[in-house]
Image (cartoon, rainbow, N blue to C red; front, side, top):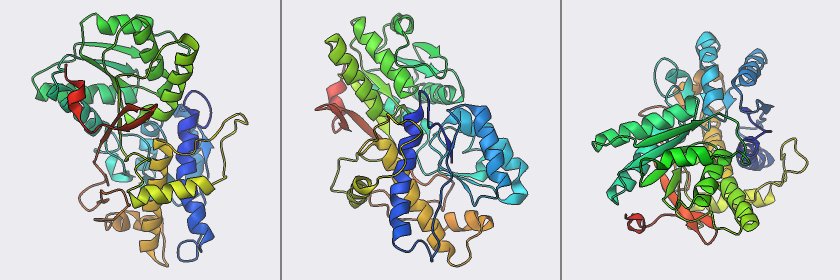
Length: 375
């Protein structure tokens, strides 16, 4: 696993890792899979493409079973040519935390299996729901790299289906912190009087834009994607609100690729919460980092772990990398305990459901009625 474990996006890697390791430790403690235990080797790339490339080369040299749960579009995209280069070595990337298109389409899609819905799925749903309540003038704030441009393109495509265009846009450089001043970008976005803003960014950048918009007196809805790590973003906004005497958490929307981890009616959520409460594992290289009890990111990691274990279980006594395509593609109508079955029999994306959340009582909870957002 190559991911950011430090820096502006470090929490993503840490919590993703903690989610699947809580499940793997549970499986290993109960005899493993056909008597074998699972070990994950994490390597920090700081959310930068070059270190991710070097980490991946080392993994291939070390003859790992598979590449698993990478985090981020710019990093993951950068290693796709390596998968093609080492095609004879049966190197596959399983379930990265990114919804970008390059690893879902030729020529690289054949080497990657995605569990989560795509950014095109997320942006299409946000646009469709906003337009349905009369919010047709949509602006886009995006990270100026492969991740941001994929999301920007998803919004553009979705709007075109409604005969609409992006009304204004602003980009920012990858790696900006929450302390960055985005007031100039906020003013630029508002020049064309949008009804809503869709962000394709990280928790720090999206949170900072929301703060600066509200400080300018702008109250329109701001929506973001799953990669924004809404739990961390909300924490930053709560802290800034207490400091500045403002509420920065109203009229926020975030799409998610997993159900709400508070929905204990779902058996998958109940097991996830039980395992996370008992997991005392790694929390990164930062001694000051306080792991989250639950989060959308660690819940997605947990689901990755469940599917990986199912793949290994189906391999029986002969687990080999060469069998990964055959075995994963046999997974159809597999119950994760979240109300939506995984199906790899028709393609290399197991789930396509998108969930929509807003802040209620200080946390992101499911949106049950979009009419509250009617213009």
